[in-house]
Amino acid sequence: MGYPHRSHERETPVLSKHFGDPAARTLQGWRERGGYVALEKALKMDPAEIQTIVKDSGLRGRGGAGFPTGVKWSFMKPDGKQHYLCCNADESEPGTFKDREIMRWTPHALVEGVALGAYAIYATVAYIYIRGEFTEPLEQVRAAVKEAYAAGILGENAMGSGKTVHVHVHQGAGAYICGEETALMNSLEGRRGNPRIKPPFPAVAGLFGQPTTINNVETLTAVPHILNNGAEWYKQFGRPDNPKSVGTKLFSVCGNAARPGNYEVPLGFNFGEFLWDLCGGAANGREIKAVIPGGSSVPFLTAEECRTAIMDYEGFVAAGSMLGSGGVIVFDDQQDMVRQIARLCRFYAHESCAQCSQCREGTAWTTKIMERISAGDGTVRDFDTLLSIADNMTGKTICVLSDSCATPVVSGLKKFRHEFEAKLKPTPGVVGYGSTATAAAAPRAASPTA
Amino acid sequence: MTFGPSTPKPSPDQLTAHGAEHDHGPYEAVFTGAARAELDELLTRYPNKMAALLPALWIVQRERGWVSDDAMAEVADVLALTPAYVKGVVTFYTMYHQHPVGRYFIQVCTTTPCHVCGAEGVVDAFLQHTGCGELGVTSADGRFTVIEVECLGACGFATPVMINEQFLESVTPARVPEILAALT
Ligand SMILES: Cc1cc2nc3c(=O)[nH]c(=O)nc-3n(C[C@H](O)[C@H](O)[C@H](O)COP(=O)(O)O)c2cc1C
Ligand code: SF4
Ligand code: FES
Image (cartoon, rainbow over all chains, first blue to last red; front, side, top):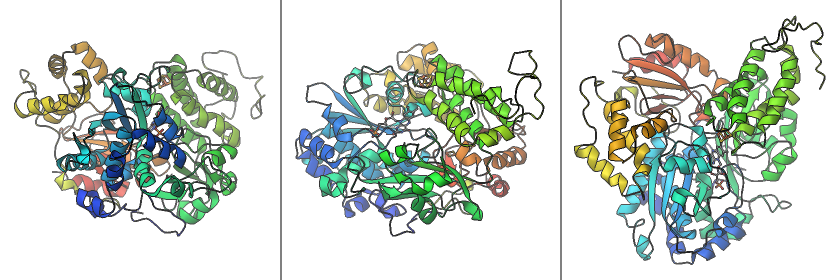
C-alpha cells in the first residue's frame, strides 16, 4: 500500500487530498494549493464570528470523544487572560495513524489550523504536542513552523493583521496517557503525564492555570476548509437523516486488512462497503472475523455487524461500538482472539499512569488473567473474575484509560466466548489464584453467567 | 531496498549512532555553548522554566546518548528544580534512557494491530541477528539493544521499527539481516 492510496470513487479527499505529494510540504507548495487563505481571512474577522461558523458547521472533535468543536471554542471568552491552544498530536491509540499522515504530508495544513484555532479562542500562544516517536512528523511540522515564522505568517503582526499568534512544537517522550488532554497539559508543563481531576475544566483553568482548549490534529486541520468554503459546504458531507455527524473523516485501517492505510470518507458511509470495497476485506483471501472500528478502546464488531454498521458517531453506537478515533483494526478468521485481547490488556497495563488503584491494579490483574487463559491455564471462574474486575474499572477513575482496558475484555467475552472456553484447562485443578480449593464442583464449560 | 511505501526513506546506512561514546569520566556539563544557547531559546517559548524540562532532557539524550543522574542534577540546576523532581519525571517517560544503550537502539512495535501481522517474528529476527538474544540487553559488541514498544502510531505499516531516530515501515523478519547489514 502507499500514497496516493485512492482506489475508490467514493473516497472524499479533503484533508488527505495532498497525501503523497511531497511538493505540498513546503510553504510555497502549500500556498499554491490554496494554503493560508483561510488564516488571512480569519485574522480579519472577530474570533466570536469564527466560533459561530465552526459551531454552525457541525464539526466534532476527531480525537475520540466527538465533542462539538465550535461549542468547545465558545467557552473561551475575551476575558483579558492569557489563553492557550494545545494541539493534541500525541496519537498513541493502537490502530490510529491519521494525524501522523496529516503532519507528514501537509504540515502547513496543521500549522494553519492551529494558528486559526488559537486566534479563534483569543489565544496568542499555541503548542503542538507531538509524541516523541514521531520523528518525521516532528521534523516536518518544525520545518513548517519555521517557514511560517520566516514568512511573517506567525509571530507578532501575523500576516500583517496586527494580531499575535505564536506556535511552538513540543516533543513528548513516550507515554500513551499524554494523549489524554489534562495529562498532555501536565506533560507540557514539565510534569509527569498524570491526568488531572476535572473540574476545573481546561477552559477554566488549563495549561499554566490559564483558560485552554485542546484539539486533535484532524479537528484543527478541518477548520481552514470550513472557513474557506462555509458551514453549509461542510454539512453536505454526512447522511441526510443525521445532522449530528457531518463532514469527512479519516479512518486508519490496519491489522489483517488487504489494503491498510488511511481513507477519507464522508461520515455516514456504509461500513460494509468501506471494509470490503475500499479496504479489500481481509488480507490473503481470508475472511474477516472481527473489527475494532474506532481505535483499541471501543467494543468489537463481528463481521456480520460490520456489514450494516454506519460510519458516524451515532451509527457505530447503534451497532454496539463507537467511532472513537477512527482506527479500524481488522482481525481475520485465523486470529486467536484471546491472545490478541491479552496483548491489548498488556498495552493498557503498561500505559496506566498508576494514579488510580482501580486502573493500576485492574489493568495488571486483567492482563495476568488474560495471559493465563491464553496460555491454556484458565478456569471458567476466571470469566466472572474478569467481569467483576472490569466492572470495578469502569466509570470509577480519573480518566477513561481504565475503562478502555475493560472494554475489549467484556466485549471479547460477549462475542467470542466460545474461543475463551475452548482455551480453558482440560481438567480443572486448583480453582482461582491463591485458593487451595479443588475444582471438583466447577463446571468446565458453561459459566453460571452464560 | 525500499522503506515502506510512502515517503522517500533514508537508507539504513545513513543512520547515525546515538550520541558519542558513553562518558564514564568526571561529569561534563551539557548546557554550555550551543546547547546552552538552544536551551535559552527554548525558554522564551514558555512562561516558566519548568516547562522546558522535557525539551532539556531531549537535548541531554541527544548529546550524551542517555540521561545519567549527573545529567539530571545539571538539568535540575539550570531549570531551578530539584534532582529528585527531575528523576521523578524522567522515570515516567519511556523514551529517556536511564542507562547507556547500544549504539543502535532498536524499537519494535508489538501492540495488537502489529501483533496480528506477525510483529513477534520481527522481534525474534532482531534478537537473533543482533546477537542480543534477549530484550533490553545490549549485544556484547555494544552495538545493539532491542526492545519491544507499545504502538508507534504507524499501525498500517506493520511492522514499524525505530532504529535511533529513524523510522522504518513494513519490516518483515526476512528484511532484518539486510537492515542490520546496512548499519555501519
Ligand atoms: C487515555 C486517553 C488517550 C487519548 N489520546 C488521544 C490522542 O492521542 N490524540 C487525541 O487527539 N486525543 C486523545 N484523547 C482525547 C483527548 O483527551 C481529547 O478529548 C481530544 O484531544 C480533544 O480534541 P478534539 O475535541 O479535537 O477531539 C485521549 C483520551 C484518553 C482518555
Ligand atoms: S484511569 Fe489509569 S491512566 Fe487514567 S488517571 Fe487513573 S491510573 Fe491514570
Ligand atoms: S500497533 Fe504497532 S504501530 Fe500501532
